[in-house]
Length: 128
Image 1 (cartoon, one colour):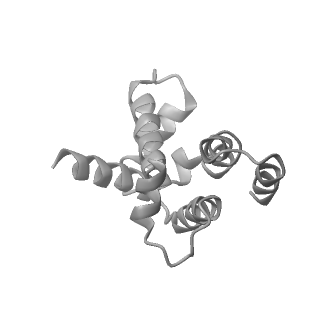
Image 2: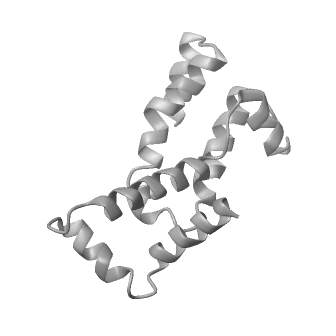
């Protein structure tokens, strides 16, 4: 992240360009494999995301997070994680039973698996 911040400072880029660089360089690294591990607490992701956002806006760390998101027109990365988890779940449900991942999913859903429980909780949250 600091490499991107340094390049942004060196080339005097606009805030929109800095945010775009975050989305194209840092965000894929942070969210790699989140379809599987996303049910865990992702506070570190948000902390890094907010640190970057506050840094490019030259704000103090005490600035309320919702104001930072609103100023940049962004939302927490946990929303991206949940969307990717639900998308992955949808693919697992629609896979042919010949795929290994579909077979494993069918086995895991019968055992109170934390990942399956997180998917169920997320779906219930959005449907109610």
